[in-house]
Image 1 (tube, protein in one colour):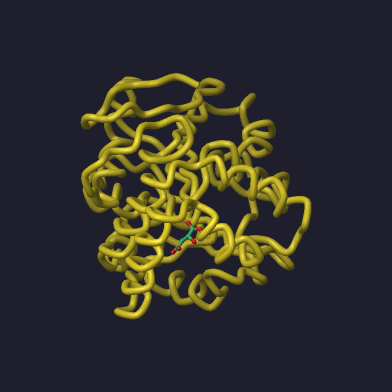
Image 2 (cartoon, rainbow, N blue to C red):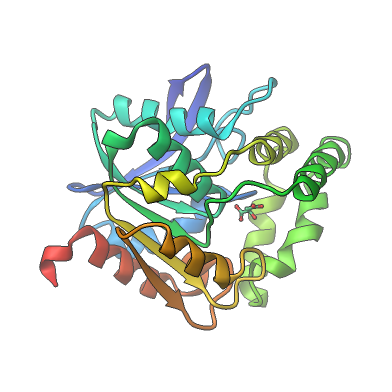
Length: 259
Ligand code: MLT
């Protein structure tokens, strides 16, 4: 992993390959390692930038509160550091919320947007309240609180659950609580999709227990730039459940002219 100071934190990132830049943004409460198999498929064909978001993996956790826009601005700082004006952004779940925040802040820096198991809407008042309660419990009791709440819903595959469990238990409670509060305060990103001038790909498993497939269908309706690919029998973790299929779809999106 490399590290770069941005916005007062140290942001860790992996960097593979050359050519078209693609940023792979992990979801909650995970880190860059969820993309490992997808990286294996794509690294010979494009340039992959795979950060640990602030508060996760090897990146530092700020003590004060922050927003998804701050997390998006960390990615802009990382692109600046790498001398890249534009990139395709691939966001998984919370990573998709951050990619949408990035597109709101820096629309001209987005060459394309892929939303994997994600959604544009903000939280309902009850969800928001639940996030704050969970953040308080994580700060006091540790990350097992989110592990218990989420693990079975992330994937039905026991082997994948075991890998995810290792990733979640290695996260810093401060970062996990910080991201929960940031997600609670996120705004509706639907206008980003309806006003987008860049291509959008929505990849969603029809067995996603955290963000139901219906949300992906409604999201597609928001933009005439969006294509939707439904991954059959797949849950919330397509990059671990069907990495080869996901990589193939990403490759088609990155190199449409090769079709
Ligand atoms: C994620 O997978 O990133 C989160 O479950 C998203 C969320 O909690 O809204």
